[in-house]
Amino acid sequence: MKQVEERYISLLTDFGFKRIFGSAPNKDLLICFLNSLFNGRQVVKDVKYLNPEHVGDVYTDRRAIFDVYCEGENGEKFIVEMQNAYQAHFKDRSLFYSTFPIREQAPKGNDWDFKLNHVYTVALLNFSMNEDAFDKEKIRHHVQLCDTATHKIFYDKQEFICVEIAKFNKSLDELETLYDKWLYALKNLYKLTQRPKALCDKAFDRLFEEAEIAKFTPQEQREYEASKMAYRDIKNSIDTAKREGKEEGLAEVMEKGLAEGMKKGMEKRSLEIARKMLAKGMDAEMVMEITGLSESQLQQLKG
Image (cartoon, rainbow, N blue to C red; front, top):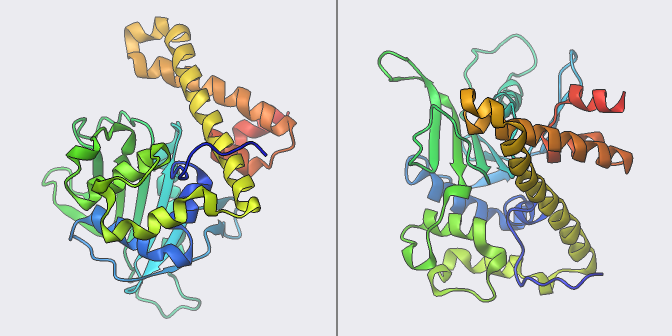
């Protein structure tokens, strides 16, 4: 097996993210991160991990597979997702995913008053979303249902929190809050050769212990290498798509702006990657997760 160069795993990979935030022995790390994200507005004291795979109802067999899915001590649900690549229907996907923890709260039988617990969908985005509704100067975006005239919250039990970690550029010397430190770790952990002073808080003791690659079993190292390869393919595809988008979308840029041209290039590149993955026998669900393509787009490739 190829020698692993990094000392610590990348939290941007599927393996790294789930190892740190998606396993019961490390739930304190997830709790710490969530509390730094909520910054006192919501306090998470304990979580119970739930099955991250959900199958649709009798009308559909469409599945939703979460990176991390857990329940707080008061019944609130948390979906935490790491998204490394742009998706054409990201908002639709997030809303669709949030319906599963809503529907599963309905008890069997007719005796129910429709009272629901909170559902939080946390999306960590390793790209700039370029969303018109967002403040371009902000990294963290908090979305709830509100009245468009008064801007007052209409329904407070369904929340979407998007964090554009790709925009986070603070250096170690600039880290002030626990939230800053978590964002730095998410983006840069794999680049570190030793634990920096800025991340010597007790909260990060277990993070560095669990993230040290030298302590992995041979099987864990193989799984991490495979996950890292998939992550690199995604990032290479994005870089290529940006270049192709700038070239192929040049005419449209004059009318619709650079973002639309880049989007077309990225979608074309995603189709090429998906075709190669399917040819190698990769599972369709995994291909959709990695490329962001829809089931109908995949069916067209198969046809």
